Image (cartoon, rainbow, N blue to C red; front, top):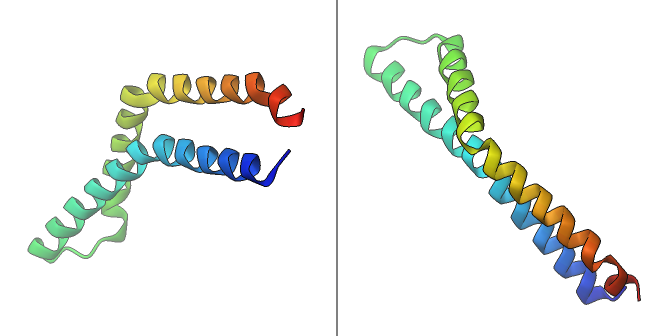
Length: 89
């Protein structure tokens, strides 16, 4: 296995991880920002206020994007297993 193959595999792995985590992180970021803006406008300083909306938002994001996330991960795993003989040989 050459250095180029290892770097390419690591890059592909990081890109897939970024793609898979993006819906959850963006949802959590948007909800957190909205709650923080609401808290600053109303001067309510409750730290647990953002927990339930983030939990619900992440759950909805997983329901909407979970199928796509699973297909992406399975396709990436299949690509790795299919390319394994060429990487080792």
